[in-house]
Image (cartoon, rainbow, N blue to C red; front, top):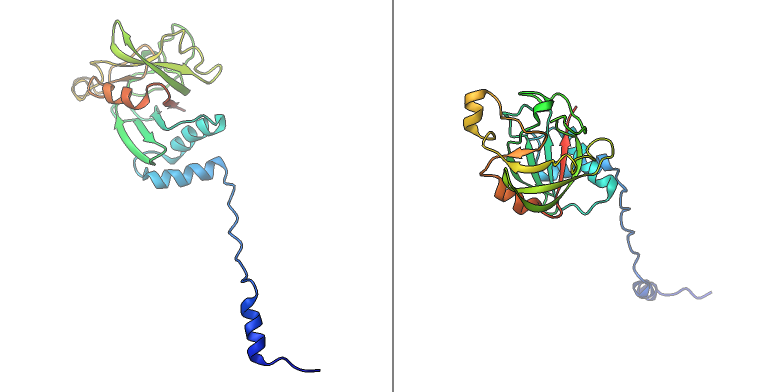
Length: 212
């Protein structure tokens, strides 16, 4: 048997297709893992409790809604805290943090109870789709809200729960009373913040109200 010269063997090896490295498998992360990664990417450590962000993110992820901007109202914090967070999920950044009032039927400094009932004047938890800008006869420029959680906030429209501004949402009011004023169940904002919130959330944003 004639043995092939080493030079010929090497030449033949060079002509063979090179081996390709298989790409690493894409991990199918659960909602909790995705929320944790996003929490870190946005840089929310020290600004928001991780479990609050996870709850808000899970609420939109389970519904597979096309959310670009998500507002989270953390009603476990006192009303003196800037407990409303507006997050751009596409750019992965916190774009606004400010005050938000709760309903008079939910407590004073703290939001201690929630209700979906007409006449309760209480805040309702859960996920809302933010609708069109409207002009409220009482409050001026405001945003419609559609409650998406049956039995939890589904009466929002019939209760006329909207995002609106109010004079009782301000640093001056806090200084005088030790808390924000309270609405009849609406997530009320400051006069100064309302135009920006309308710009960010109208017709397609989402609001998640978190509470114990």
